[in-house]
Image (cartoon, rainbow, N blue to C red; front, side, top):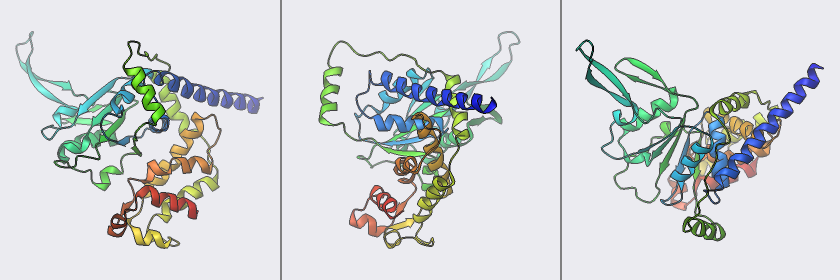
Length: 332
């Protein structure tokens, strides 16, 4: 009876996760046309307690997409526009002296910054100096901020979506590789198809705009985050993920010649962790009890593209990291 009960419980959980995914896509679809893969990868990151870096030109609805996702999930949304004069206190908050009306004494009061939200949009993160970038990246890593010796814990779930504009590079401060590694996914937001763009124009130029409804709450998201780590993974799937990461390193045994020719540095151990976590979340959202190698392949590009450092040869030949990842998967 215990085995049957456990099996029925597992089936209900899988059905619930799959149903939540469908509802989220349905509600977001009232506002956002297309970008299904991007939305799913963002959802996967949230369930894995990870963060995303979005790279795309202006006007592709990145801000609207995240704001709509926060509404659908009934989460607090905050947007930070990164500029060269932005200070760490503009992100995490600051202490201000106030006079106590009862005692007449002056006391410090902490005013929370925009980082105290569930979903943070860090718009054009590479436009602000490293000191300010570090303030956000510390919060991403620790889920805490420290002001004047006091530590404040951020609300869960906590998710940062940072954007970069690939066109204007003057006056920017590119994130170092060590800081890029803190992002679970790097997502390339591309132009919509002709049909999608036609639908976007029709929808946004009419009087009637869709209003997304709330389909999932904070407690359900936290529950799904806990479930991701409980999803079992077969050894052959883990072996594939580890081999996939290892092959990207030029000095590893069995690295193909094209890796030695094009790669300066390969992906680190965190890539393997995120490949498996991403595959688990993808399987859960699609109603599968356990991830397959195909699920690892589906999340390979978002996980690896910002963790592989090309050398001069690859850049001179116009070889992209996505092309290298595709070659690596083919060899395996």
